Length: 473
Ligand SMILES: Cc1cc2nc3c(=O)[nH]c(=O)nc-3n(C[C@H](O)[C@H](O)[C@H](O)COP(=O)(O)OP(=O)(O)OC[C@H]3O[C@@H](n4cnc5c(N)ncnc54)[C@H](O)[C@@H]3O)c2cc1C
Ligand code: SF4
Image (cartoon, rainbow, N blue to C red; front, side, top):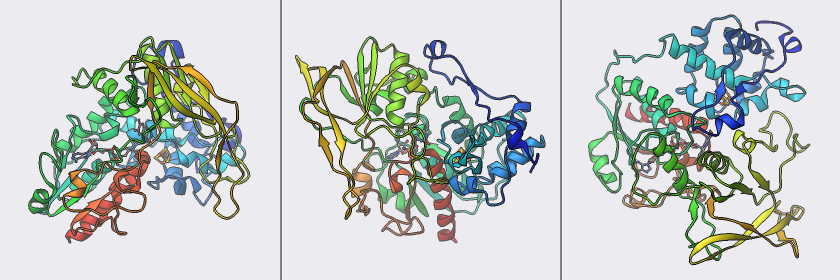
């Protein structure tokens, strides 16, 4: 622990953000890192409290108090080594992780938590600047071949771990670009794509082979892969979007969020796409769904020049502070205002969309009703939703983006060909070692646990890699 009473002396400092007016005219990242001196004092706020609750709150068990202390002592290279021992890609989590660690920081009981995520980002960025992150060109090969299907953070972390152990890795990706949702989902203003590319180049130099535009189940079957490789890991994500099959769903102008977001990611990189252009420019945009995906649609619509942006959420607005039934160190269920919300959207909570209304087959309005949730049923704990009488209203809508989550992996030939079993949540079922019902075929990431977070995908990639390595031994 660097400074014994640091947490009493120094306040939490946030990174500065470009002001809204100037950041919404571009798609790039808009936060500015703290200076070295500022970060040192932020590191000094860590109490090294003995039981590192922050570390248990972090899905990859980052050694947070250790690197906070090293930053305080100006030992940036050592901090990077500690960070990389648990997290393959801190440059991704340092930007997009919702930082459950900070909810578990002991300071968070009654004062603002240590700014763990910002420190993480600065450690890894400094390590890149200092030339510490470079390919290891002396990996000794084991002679085993592993195929990984899907190049999101789960596939990438599994590939990185297994490659470092000497296995030969081929990652198959159906899209033209590597990175899964990091590349074609999460907007550039949260994660610029050169950050993803920088890591891919290191992995390629270390020997990981990437095959883009190759969809397993279409361009190559799973059984062909099984014949060619010693083990296979399925990391295809949870790409099936939840639909809203109400009257008017087929009207022109109602789209899945991902169809909209992917186009903007491709446009930013000057890449072509063949689908019909979805644009928010000069439109009244309604985003249905109040989560991460919805928030990304809001920021993207605002940058595209939307006339207005309205966000509809079925559930009630969460409280500003933790409720008594959601105590520290649990993840805090509180209302989070994202940077996209700050940029100028209106939010409506406890509303149900009843009908998409239009003329000449084009969306114009949405009919909405306000709802409330009854007290939980004492037996099941479930809360019934009821519509509030006479609360219907209509809103203008020229573009509707459905961002209501995902219902698991797409059930296509990848799953059907060898009859890969699913669990009761419609994700791929595995045993405790991440193996599916087929010997030698494993699964990890959103494809196995359902829609989740980048940091959980990294955790799953690391865990499945350990199981596959054991299997091959
Ligand atoms: C819009 C959006 C924003 C998000 N923002 C955040 C955020 O800010 N922070 C956060 O922590 N999490 C965020 N998430 C969640 C996070 O991105 C995912 O949990 C994470 O990317 C899952 O990683 P994965 O590797 O399991 O799957 P994915 O990232 O989905 O990658 C799966 C890959 O497999 C490929 N694939 C699928 N089937 C095949 C096949 N048959 N053959 C070849 N390739 C195939 C896909 O093309 C894709 O590239 C967001 C999700 C979305 C949708
Ligand atoms: S990966 Fe996420 S939870 Fe873990 S230390 Fe970083 S910000 Fe915190």
